Amino acid sequence: MSTVVAVSRRSLPVGSVGSHAIGWWGMICAVLTEGALFGYLLFSYFYFAVQPRQIAFPPELPSLWLAAPNTVILLVSSVAVWQAERGARRDSWLRQVVGLGSGFVLGVIFVGVQLLEWQSRPFGLSSNAYGSLFFTVTGFHMAHVVLGLLILLALTVWSALGYFGPRHSAPISIGAIYWHFVDAIWLAVFFSFYITPYLGLRHGP
Amino acid sequence: MLRIASTDEVAASWLPSGDAVTAALAACGFSGWASDGNGFALAALGVMLCWYGMGLTRLARRRGLTAHDIGRAAAFFSGSALAFAAIGPPLAAYSRELFSMHMLQHMMLIIGAAPLIIWSRPAPMLLRALPPRIRTRTSAAAKALGLNNTASRLLNPIFVWLAFCAGFVLWHAPGPYALGMRYGSIGLAEHLTFFLTALAFWAIAIGSSGRHRLGHGARLLFVLTAAVLTDLPGALMVFAPRPLYPEHAAGAADWGLTLMQDQEIAGLVMWIPGGLAYLAAAAWLFVAWLRDAENRTILSAARSAAPVALLLGIAPLLTGCNPSGAESIPNFNGNPVRGAALIRTYGCGGCHDIPSIADAEGNVGPPLTRMASRIYIAGVLRNTPDNMSLWLREPQRVVPGNAMPQMNIPAQDARDITAYLYTLK
Image (cartoon, each protein chain N blue to C red):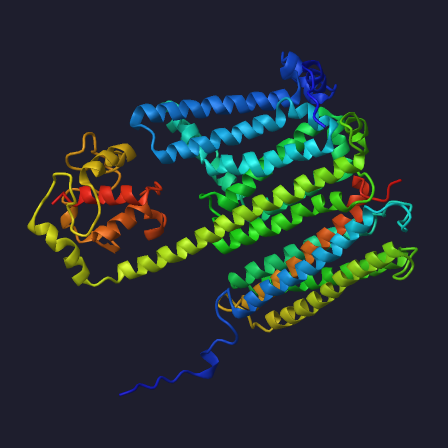
């Protein structure tokens, strides 16, 4: 004899349950491959930086006026998203929405400041080797930021609609991993392009 | 070309360089060789060695040393010897002349001394050196100050990975490196950064304790990502077509090398032995991972063993007792007389009440009276000779977090101890 149990469709969970969902593993793999991509890109920058002076390198050290505050903005947005994740686990709707929303807004500000930074550069993508490397690496990073902003926007809207709670917070965690990754990559890019010239890694005699 | 530096030259390279640390040390009354930051580090290392030696003698006097203790002590002493060789003469002098020698020094600290010292697990031995009263007071004070908590918080894998890689990359950039060469105290800070972050790094990679204990897969990732990142500066040094560290120009010329040759050797020293060390650690982790999976399979089979197997294992014991030293359990190769001696060597009596073993009246674990007649081991395993030796060897894998310490008992020792325990009816 078999028993049939009727469960209303509304009480079934939407999406994956638990924190280590399939999407979580998928995001970890994506982060690893994208991390490898930036590893190659940054190594090509360093390989360029140790070449002799013949290849173009800007004569002046890079200005930190826009890039340094922008780095802080991105770091703060990561903290906001982290707070949102905690909010989801503790069933605080407000913390969730405010965290994701402010993460999104700070990300948009980062993109704006980065566009100003690009405009302030006297060289372009095709001016010289340094320009190509600078715009390729920061451009790849910018593309990742824009994708992250789309993810954050969707998560903000969904959490405002009350889709997530302590039992269903995996999407927020997955989005947060991506956003922290974008942030960490920016730190590596910032360190390579803006800090190492001050540490003696620029074109020497 | 090899050249032996005279003692004068060695002394010259150790001379105080007129910076804050030297001045402070001089103000404290340090003079002569100890006034250099390096001398200070060497003195600290010497103190640690004596301290460890005291713990070891105390242990030897109390219960004798097992092969395991001797292996750990050998690791500690060889790790310290490597650190000593790295920052002491003559390498300290050579490393001011040759960039490649300087990189050799860094590698000895980061992938030689640090993992050996971590593998030796020095903390229990250092604690043992203290008199019992001070020992309890120290741990009480550490608890009151929240030191253990802070330490395990600092050993967060992400934080340690970042600190290790950032420290490594940062100090090898030409600017900070030149500063370290010019000022003694900055050079000392450089080597301290390497050594301390390497200790933390290896504690997470191959250590066994801590709140953030990682799984084998995560540890592999932890080691291999750091390996790739810390190999990159070496690769850059090899491939760079111009000298990046001009402060070694005079030193390299003294040794008959050009700056470029010196830099290429340095890059290779960093790249190849460094890569091999991380690869060895990764291989070791991988083997440990496989062994762990195997143990887990054995364990789940043991847990679900039918009572029939239990009867087969113990029934012959109930019929006859043979304490003469020969095999006491049929089809189980264990010597109960040797087992009794091993129980004394491993100090099982410190925690257990064991019949017929002198001074074995500990109250920490359960008494082992009538062990052969008990049905369960540790409340989870059926009491069979094989399960008993498994439990003796891997108590932390059978019941993670229980009070029985992982003593790394060899297989034959575990069988002999089992054989003794099965004479207790």
